[in-house]
Length: 407
Image 1: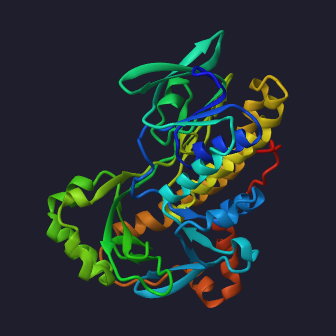
Image 2: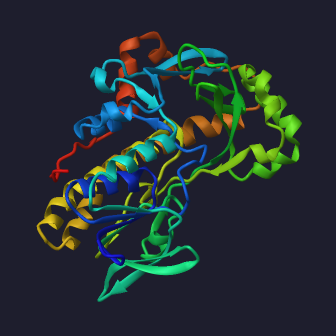
Image 3: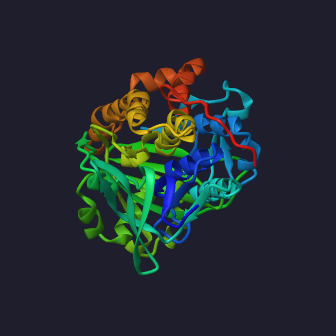
C-alpha cells in the first residue's frame, strides 16, 4: 500500500472504525484506520458487548478468541427501583454462544480487533493520527487530511469513512445536516473500588430525584450518576463531600469505597447526545457509528449499533469495490439498511428520557412504585425475553455476508 492511497480510509479507531477496518481488509481491500490517540486505554467507554456483536464475531470465526480476553458474563439485567429489586431482561434463552452480555473493557475489545485486522496485508492502523479535513475533487470526497508527528498529511482513498464519534469533525466538513432529538440528561462517570465477587452484580438504581448505574468491573464499580442536562456546575458547587454523601445515600453499596473519589478530577462529565444525520453519505464519503447517530447510554447499545453499521457497510461495499466497481451509488444503501434500526432504538431511548427518566429526576422525594410494565416483567419471567431481545439484538441485526481473502 502506498503512503498516500487506500481503497478505504477510516477516521476513528473506536468500535465502528476498527470493525470496519477488519472487515474491509478481510475482504481483500487496502484499508487505513486513523486513531487520534496513541493507545486505546481510555476509561468510561461503552464496554457492553451484546449478543448481536458476539454473533458477528462467531460468524467471523473469532468469538472464542475474543472471549479469551478479560470479561464477565451478564445473563440478565435488573435494577433497584423505588427501593424494590426488579428483574427486567433475560438473555439466557438465546443460543448459548451468545446468551449473555460480555462486560469487556473497550480497550481490550479494540486491541483484539486491531490484532486480528493486522493479520491481513491490506490493513494499516495509524495511531496519533487525527483527521481534520476532507480532500475534495470533482464534487466528491477523495480522501482526508490528518495530523501526525507535528505534520499535516494527505491520504487519498476511494471511500472515506467517518467513524470519529459524536463530535465528528468529518461529518461537519462533509456538510451533512444533524437532527438533534434532544437529550435531557448528562452523566458523571467515576470509579469506586470493590472486592471481586463470584458473579457480576451490574445494576441500576432508580430513586426519587436520583438515577445511578453501577457497572461491575470486578475489582471496581464503574458508576454513572445521572442528572438533568446543564446542571453539572450546580452539582459541583455543592462540593465533593456533598456529592459523595449523596451517592452513598442512593447506592449504600458504594459507601466504603467512596473515599477514593477524592476530588472532581476523579469525576468525568459525559454530555449526553441523541441525534442522527439526515443523510449519512455523499459521493466518496460515508458516516457510521456515533458519527452518524449519537446514542444515549440507556441500554449500553451504542457500541453494538456501531458494529452493526460497520458490518452493513462492508456487506454492501466490499465485494463490488474488490471487483473495481464505483462505490458511490452504493453508499446511500448503508443508511437505507441501517436507518430503521437506528430510528427504532432512538425512539425507545427518547421515550425513556421523556416518560421515565426526566419525571423521575424531577421528582422531589417520597416513595414510588415501579411502573406497571416493570412490575409485570418482574412477576412473569417469560416476559423478560422481550427487553432481552430488544437490548440483545435490536431491530434488523446484521449477519456477515462478504467475501474473505485467504491469509
